Amino acid sequence: MSDVPETEPTDKLAADDADLAAQVEKWKALSRQNESRWKETSRELDQLKQGQMTEHEKALEAARAEGRQASATEFGRSLIKAEIQLQASAAGVSVQPDFLDFTLFAAEDGTADPEKVKAYINGLPVESEFADLQGAGYHRNPAPSFTSMDPNELADMISGGRFV
Image (cartoon, rainbow, N blue to C red):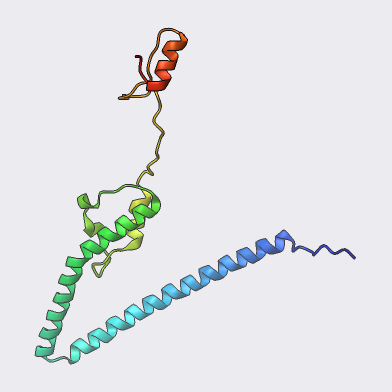
């Protein structure tokens, strides 16, 4: 008997990973299904309530809905702008949200749709920083030039960066 612990075979680990991925997909599908059922049931309940309301209650509810829509439209722009800037900084890209049509990134309720914003941000080119290369482009302070290898000239150049 050796003191070395036995390791699990890689086939078993791969099978566990595949099983875990299948379980994740199963629960995601069930979650989507439950969400769609909830939305459908909520719509039916709202329709039932609408049918039982008086004219005064209907007018009051319409005014509330209009107020909610107006506030979502007003504050939705700033929420969408903030979402774009957040995802852009996380992805390391530069974006000017002032020139964008925010309606393209709005969800049904007027707030930011993170998936639409993410799709836009992923389509932008990532900025890369390059070091300044001597000789590539315009440089204000070029390297000093000297014509001889005289030790006095070299010492003056090193000490002050220019010829004396």
